[in-house]
Length: 303
Ligand code: NAD
Image (tube, rainbow, N blue to C red; front, side, top):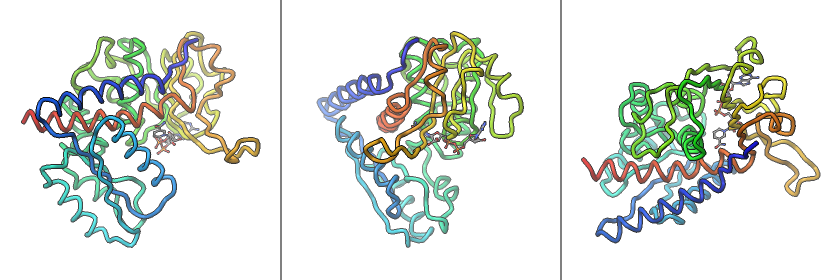
């Protein structure tokens, strides 16, 4: 069994990005710039944004935080998005979710210029991914693809079961895996992701166990700790655990621990490859946002 070390791979990618940004600057360019819009004071969102700002600084991306109180109106937020769309110095930006209930996330996301949509969540980017056109892919599926590629885990002809059908993970992940590879992401390395036979499962799927038992690769993004158990996987499977759920744990320093969707202790011995939680998909997600920002910068420079 090999642990897919997202922390290590993400650090490798950060080094590559740092060198790439340094090269851009050395050849007379300016640093890529990312805008991060945050509304209100949701503690988890504030932590995510702080981590994203720190990650940008570490590779030389110029990150700007644009904060609003949760009393901001939808119209004011849409006005901010329009300004960022038109700001030549801003290569990409994200709007940290969730937004307060009086603001339509769909309206805000749909108003972002897809060329600056480094979260890859606009209908245009998703549609382009579906059609195999150059697009910006949302961070978690991009990170998982990168992890599979760098460990040279082939997906061509394999049966991949994706558990979860969210817009940010399950759906785009399934789409990337079933594509002819190399269509949606630029500059990929040797082992390609794609050409897989994909089954998408969700909360209403019947016979989840039987379906999983036919999988070569299982990607679980359900937010249901311990969902994937040892009796659901065959020997030699690859398991990617996307789930992150806070579970009360009085013995942990913070009173809780982070749990994945996989019964790691019993599933891992049967696996060829498996991601740990934490330290697997999570670090890959953050670094993918940085890759997407540099990609948006390059796409703009090429146009
Ligand atoms: P979500 O929370 O929007 O939806 C969960 C999905 O799982 C749904 O499509 C549902 O149908 C399916 N599901 C739920 N229970 C199920 C069950 N018992 N059997 C089969 N399917 C079931 O999905 P999300 O936003 O993709 O998040 C999923 C998990 O991944 C969460 O724990 C989230 O915190 C985590 N996440 C982690 C990262 C990361 O970087 N590691 C990124 C995004 C999401």
